[in-house]
Length: 73
Image (tube, rainbow, N blue to C red):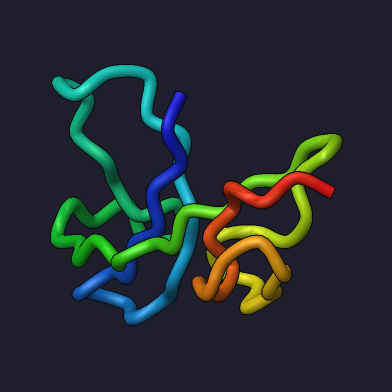
């Protein structure tokens, strides 16, 4: 299930939602409004043998990319 971040246009609060399917209409968990602006989320991951994440800015000696997520430790 993907997690989406939203800001409510009615009350201005930000929150995250788990959406089970694409047909589901998200609503603000504070005021129940459906007037939402979806925020752009940065993909991040963590697992054994991988150093850093796509958003961590960590760098390795194997490549010139910063936080590419492909370097194994």
